[in-house]
Amino acid sequence: MTLVDRRNFHLFQPLTYQVATGALSPGEIAYPLRAIFKRYRNVRVLMAEVADFDLDAREVHLRPVFGVPAPAVLPYDTLIVAGGSNYSYFGHDDWREYAGEVKSLESALVVRSRLLSAFETGEVEQDPDRRAAWLTFVVVGGGPTGVEMAGQIGELARDTLRHDFRTIDPRTARILLVEALDRVLTTFPRSLSAKAARSLERLGVTVLTGRTVVEIDRESVTIDSGSGEADRIPSRTVVWAAGVTASRLGARLAELTGAESDRAGRVAVEADLTLPGYPEVFALGDMVSVRGPDGAAVVLPGVAPVAMQQGRYAAKVVLARLRPRETRPFHYRDKGNLATIGRAAAVANIKGLKLSGLVAWIVWLTVHLFYLVGFQNRVLVFIRWSVSFITRGRGARLVTGAGAEPSPRSAEER
Image 1 (cartoon, rainbow, N blue to C red):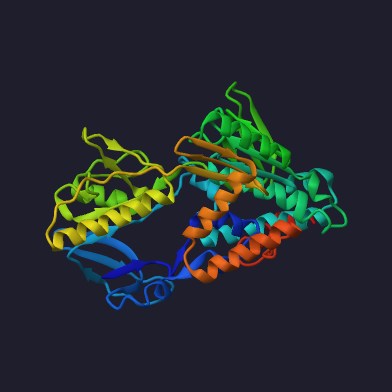
Image 2 (image 1 turned 90 degrees about the horizontal axis):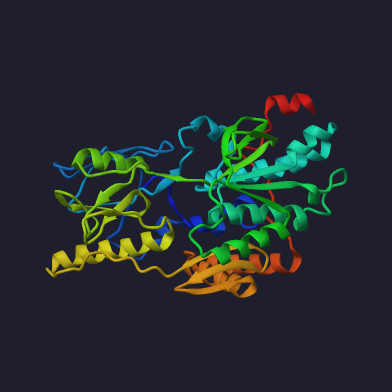
């Protein structure tokens, strides 16, 4: 068995936003792939990027990453593709430069540097209007990631940093959460969405629903309220958490197999997660939709449990073919939704059981610790969260690497 990944580590994506806000360090939510599989002598790990597929020849074409040599061609008997997804900027890819996202470890570190640099710049900025722009944070997207990110920025400003500066009061920071639909957390019941919104407001977050972002530049975000009037909000720090697009590998597989694909680039797979005409090729995760009993392609939630269940299912199908043995079509078992807003504040919908507040927060903590890879990481994160709960501190508030340098114009203004 050969595992190909362009990174040498597994990333626990549900907690990347905590790296972006200094609550956790990168190494606490990532774990080396070779360490995960060191006891499995039949597993080989290759650090490389998939360039293309030759499905008829049963070959994967690879290219090197970070200067690490990689074989040009990798033959296979069974291929499982799980390329994931990226954030979609809805045709405005130029916004990426100004609106960071937290889907990868690298991007989370960029956002962390931008957030902390904004407070540092506000401390020395003399002009009141420019200072207000630096202390205005806009989060786009009211799903779990956007809600969790906005809540963490609120706690950062109102709890963690409140005594750290001499010129500014971080508690005066303006935090906006912009959502195009009529409420946040639309996959949750309305009652839980309302509770999440109230929790955000207690943290100083202004929730703007029914609003659409129409422009983002270096100095501002422009929002359309739907009435045709545009509101320009001066802000130097924007976090993007709205919409996803499938990995390019999904579109490539659809092109090679003639499979259906949707606007987000998800390729439609059969009920056993294989591609039409190629039963030896599986595709799963955020990059696919799955055909149901009626033949219609169903888009499953873009959450970790879906990918985990699909991964286990694909492995069972491969083993069943070796025996051989019949397998049933894939069926997703929805275990519920969880989202945390802040300290002792969360919402949970578990098979119709609606929880909020401290109880939901404890459930959220337990579930995330359970699924975090690596015993050491679980212990470290538990200790980090415990200390943070008692002291309201964040030990990873470091401005480093990409995104740390303010723009040249900003430097001249100071």
